[in-house]
Structures are given as structure tokens and as C-alpha cells.
Length: 302
Image (cartoon, rainbow, N blue to C red):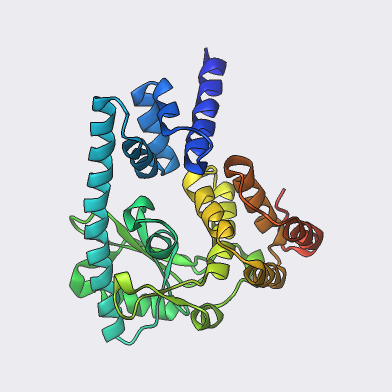
């Protein structure tokens, strides 16, 4: 019975990936029990994306269409609140003269996804030049009601701040990854120099460039795997969407950045995991270069 359940869960995950990649009808998910489907979508972080696909078919059963619409509208309303709060936080940091970069979900939602609310986020990730500036930022947002949840160890690279009554934390980072072996990842100055504007989050809001965003997405996936958090579709879909928009120049810059940071194997692994699920377009030459240079990596990606 347990084996049958495991096989069904694997089949459901593959079906969700096929719907996201466009190789299966969104209605294919309806062959699974609604409770199991909802739980899987939530666990994989793609509930709103799947709801949108189901809703847009126009011929889903009435009850299913209503549930999909409810999910999408609820997430859109939640995202509006998160973005309003994020603009308030960024404005406060700007007034305090603290440079900051927006990482991951909220940044990607602004330019990579068709609509910001389709990229679900469980927290707001902000990157600072160093620990001192992250601590300055924590003090700057105190008047907004935020408090540091715990004092991080000297080996940490982030700490969370929480506001009572607010459903999402601020994660204040001063490095892209915690592992000491990844000490050659791009630093704040390099990331800031190539950052892109995020006007939907305020005049001063900026996030990682596409090249650095893909590099970080691959590292973030590897970090989560190492922490036992699984290989969520949400993170792999980020990698897929980023890779699908790259031209030859961006691929060259990406491979060079991975080689400099000694993460070619992590990048190769992340891109091939996305390709296996979403048929991500990955140039053969890029795959070969990453595989060839993985031998000089700081960490073994296998």
C-alpha cells in the first residue's frame, strides 16, 4: 500500500510538471483526489500556477473552476499586501541609506513570471553588503514593528525579522549561501553593479541580474537539498524560466560566473533537474562546459 502511494505521488508530481511545461492539459491533474492534489501543489509551491492553468482552460468542472479561481484570487490579494509591505520596508531602508538587493521570489515575480502573484513566496529575502549592514537594517525596520527572532551564530549568513500579526518574515542575508566552501560566490558589490530595476516595488528597488539570479537559483536549490528540504517544483521552475530566456551572451556570462565561483557542478545539476521535468532548453555546449569544469568545484554536486 505504501509503495502504491509513493508511485502515485511520483506520478502526480510528474503530472504537475507536465502541466507547468505545457506538455499536458491542466485538466490532467483532475484524475487525482482533490485533497491529494491540493496537498501536493502546496508542498511543491505551485498551487497558484496550477490553479491559473486550470482556470484558463475554460472547461474545467464548475466546482474545480471555482476552487481554482478562489485560490488564484486569494493569492493575488495576499501578494498585493506583501508587495505593499515590501515597498514600505525598502523605502525605510532607503531613507536610512542602507543599500539592499531583493532576492528570489518577490524579485523574480516582478520580471520573470507573467504576474507577480504566480511566484509564491514564504518570506521576503533581502541581501546586504555585510553582517553589520544587515544588523543596521534590522534596527531601521524596528519602528515598522519588526524584531529579530534570534541572534545568529558567527557562522550564519542570515537572520529573520518578524512583525506581530504579519504572516511573512524578512530574511536579512549578507551572503548568497552559508557553506564556507562557497566563499567565491559573487559579492554584494558585483551583484549590485549588475542589478536590475524592480519598479513595481518602488523607485529604488533592485534585484539580481538574470545571470546572477540563475546562479543563485542553482545554489539555493543545492542548499535546500543539503538541508533535507527536498527538490520543490517551485525552485526548479525558477531555473527553467530563467534558462528559457537566456541568449548566447547570457549563457557565456553564466558559465564564466559559475567557473569563477566554482559551482559548475551545482549549476549543471540544477539545470539538468529542470530539463528532466520541464524539457528546459539547455544548449549542449553549455552543458558540456559546466560538466567539464565541475572538477574544479569547491563542492561535489553528485
